Image 1 (cartoon, one colour):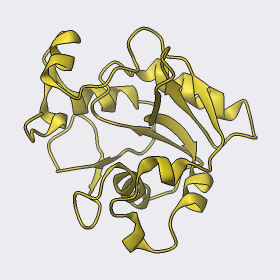
Image 2 (spheres, one colour):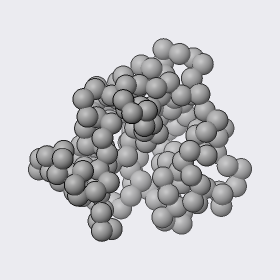
Image 3 (cartoon, one colour):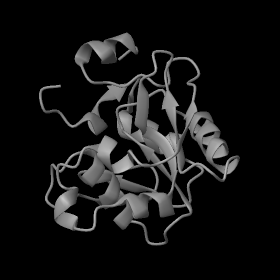
Length: 174
């Protein structure tokens, strides 16, 4: 999207970051991986080091940003504006209902998995983390999460849609 910061894009007059914050409103603590900007609720901002390490490095940097490590962590890419609090609740329930799974993520009707619209057991993410912090930069998210047992959760409506192009944004009403 021409290098624009997706968090600042507005859909219906609300930034994609604010939509993500609304979806995670039940979280006691929120860590945002990205450039610090004003928000309507308190959050901790952090960045992967070095910056630009990719989604897996960002996910792990987010884990490091918690003051108090939660048992479950919601991972939500800012470019999924239709994910809401109900989505997060369904993902959380899927993990809590099955002690054998490490997490749950949205899987659309075409079988496309959304590992950045998910809830994970923090202990499982920590165990999957590379031994060396240098190995996190550029690590494919599929490799980080590949060994985890994941419960698929079907989306309601278009909540599994992400915004990767200006056309995607127009299709969602932006």
